[in-house]
Image 1 (cartoon, one colour):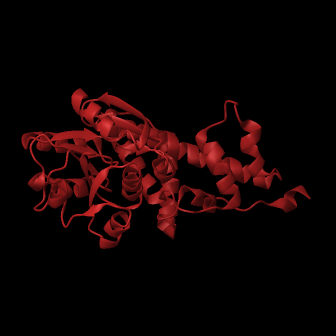
Image 2 (image 1 turned 60 degrees about the vertical axis):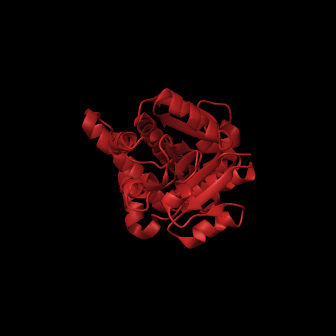
Image 3 (image 1 turned 120 degrees about the vertical axis):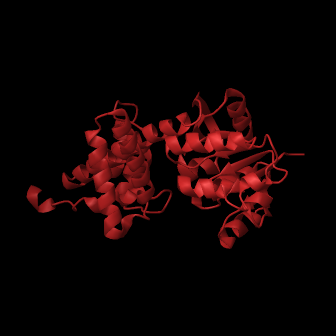
Amino acid sequence: MSRRIALIGAGAMGGAIGARLLATGTQLVVFDLDPEKRGALVAQGATEASSAAEAARGAHAVILSLNAARIVRAAVFAPGGVAEGAAPGTLLIDMSSIDPEATKALASDAAERGLRWVDSPLSGGIPKAAIGQLTLMQGGAEADVADAQDVLAQVASNQTRMGGPGTGQTTKLINQVLCGLGFLAVAEATALAEAAGVDAKMVPQALRGGRADSALLQEYMPRFAARDYRRTGRIDNMVKDLNGAQDLARLTHTAMPLTALCAEIHRMLTAAGLGGEDQAALMEFFKGPNKELFE
């Protein structure tokens, strides 16, 4: 019989992780403050819990998929939280993307209550979760990370322990710097291709295998060209992560001028009401092609 796993947070990303675990035979118990989000996973075979504490009771591991450090702390340590229901030795796997320093404090507080903590933020988004090919960067004690990797084997194809608590979150910030700049570069290149009369949808094939090739280029330039804004992520979540990267840069006295520009553009789009849109909506930052210049 499969081990009982609790999932706290069944939003877009948590829901995708939960759906994949259920599809691969995991005994899943879910809690989310939103009954509709819980219900979506219950319809797929999950057991519904009325609180985080109830979800954690009897669970081998508790997966957290939430949106901010303060929410993670409340979900674990507030009345009715995970710590109230989890047995000593229970493994807590935080797949949220939050501040590394906050993660260190959470891990320390969990240890005081006899709970194990692994930070395991992800890259790949909903599409990769659906096929079990997430990339996970993890921080925590070696044995705890090994246990987490076993729990998450059905949702991830690449799991790497980066060090102690918080190192997974630090690596996620590095990932987001690369992604944020990459999204913006591909959007800008798409705009240039369109303005110059080149079919942007053909560019990824033309550049495949070259130095400019990347997963972002192959997935997103066709979407940028088609103005395909279906949601697999959110611009305002990128703002949160780039803010975290800038906070870390200040802490470490690291100059990051390109990240600063990228963050400002994302903030502008969020201020314009596009924060809830996918990264594909970066195309709204660029003007349409001025074809008359070439006629």
